[in-house]
Image 1 (cartoon, rainbow over the protein chains, first blue to last red):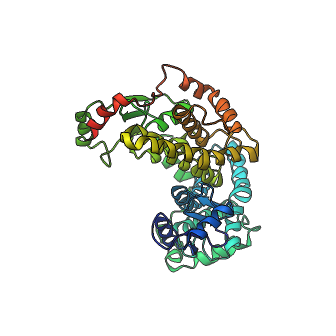
Image 2 (image 1 turned 90 degrees about the vertical axis):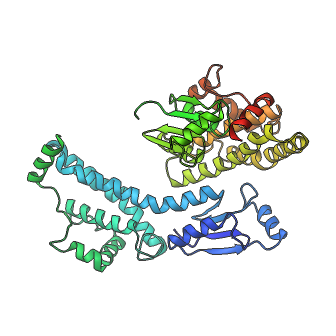
Image 3 (image 1 turned 135 degrees about the vertical axis):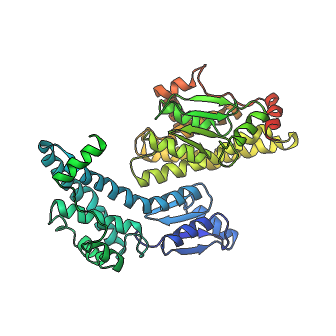
Length: 209
Length: 221
């Protein structure tokens, strides 16, 4: 999230507390501007900062968001969203070995196109915007692990697929070196290889496809 | 989806009406199981159907969903009424949440004690015409589009129309100062699925009558 979110509320729990919890749990640093007098609230209203004249209000990603649930949903989804994207991508790559020979090449081209124009630019930009080591909140999360997995799978499709994405390359190097992940990347771990012809035949038999 | 969604609630608007609107707008046929007595509610609770012992409850896609907002979110997402990306969803959420707040006021009006009713009515009219409607009027004015968010029919349009109609039931000329909301109302009402829902004989519920209040109170207490 580009720049720190800024919370506008009184210096108490109220309806803002859930939002503080979510940001804290996600490891997202935030600022707070406290409403201490009636004048403070009037000023926010007069400035047109409060869509329905009410707080909580959170300045985030260029929006002045109101409605507690809407704010919570947005923050949670940003974390989720990164994962949705990588899941979609990996789904496409996963089915590739099961494609008939004639559509395989077309689908491979589609995957490469999607990866380089739809997915990777989003993650490259996210890393660029906040300049942190990890996708969300400057702390390892499953969004990072998922992305690394997707990167490695994409590279198996096209080895130089990261050429236009310097930050993703650095991300890959960094994340691969995390001890637990490094271990998983070693031969002999429980990580599985890409599907080959033989394996495809076995799967077809098991699932009757 | 295995079979039609099945709605468990009273034969009244309450917190289920927005869900009926959404399903109807999405063109989804649904069934209803009406709670008529306290025993009906007790049975649902005993059978473990109600996660938090409350209705609304909607059987959908193999789940017994509760919490009207969660149900609304699920339906909106499933039927593509939730915008095309996260920012549109955020806008839709903001608009819908505010409309739900106004709906709460409208919904609780019949249950107000007689001496508080007039004051409550004044509050409804004040909030509607000074806090909420001006916002939506401005949104429509600023982008000049037919729908509230992303130039595409969404849950926000459905829920706003529902609220506009309920507010008019409270005070027929409540939209007098809001020309764009008036044309919005006409436009959205003409969408085929919505138009169908607005016809007599649809599953849309009528406003709560004074005489029905005691019966409802009995189910709860």
